[in-house]
Length: 361
Ligand code: SF4
Image (cartoon, rainbow, N blue to C red; front, side):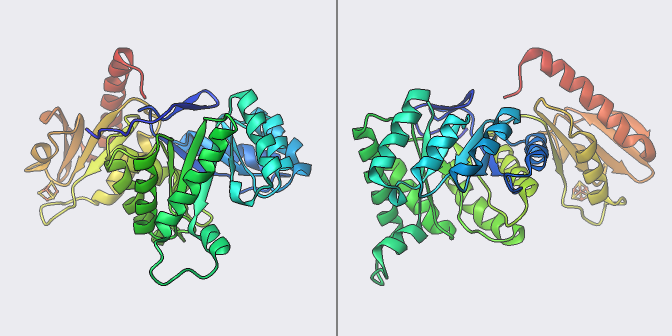
């Protein structure tokens, strides 16, 4: 079990963030704000994939009414991502944002005070984000030995202290650099020096195939330290992929226990089926299950049930037939063509039993 860092508690819509609550998954919608239906479709798809919080970019106050319509129809709490103009942030708060994301370093000081007052009145948290790019922008060319992660953490904590001086406490921090090591170091420093909930992610991380490993390394290392209350994988142009990766990482660290987790063996010379295709079919068939369940798809009946003892149930190929096992014990042998449906029926029965015992988290 991971021992989570203790933080203060904020709320994003109805969702608790921090204080040991569930680690949430976030993403950003990609549709422009004037495509209201497109945004709603994206949000619904994100929710189905396991997303908890959606963020929308609000470029200016003129578009705030559209933001409000989307926030009112959204099935997920909506965070407004605003920059520079405090009037835009105020408009987002007025239009129903559940949280706002700002960079206080690029906001007029009087405007920042107004934003803080408005968020405080409505009980909204503010995420203040530091990234290495903004530090470089302000500091100019850094010395060759400059410790950018430390500069980021120090600057962000100074801004948080200023907001606390204004009487505002519901602060969430994020410290992102384009590389895993810098993100981990900056975030660890901020975590050690404060009790703010932390949003984890790597900035400008690239296409899925590049970002996946970088983001998993950074976010995973921090989560294993007990650091992090909400996460976002950042993939160029791939919202669903971001959510799936975030939810899968949380499941792999046992920080999320909902839905069917499909585990499968790596395959060796004993396997006589197309196991990747079978595992994908099972994954798709069980995607509607909401209670935690570990389902194994194994390449042979010789070692499969034993190797997958930790799974709740599973199937192991035996050539033309498939062995269905529950709790590591073979309970039935079925024709290969019936295997997925028989497994699904058993999984749904187990899920229904568990659903009566405890709600999914
Ligand atoms: Fe090989 Fe069977 Fe183990 Fe899969 S379960 S890796 S097929 S021995």
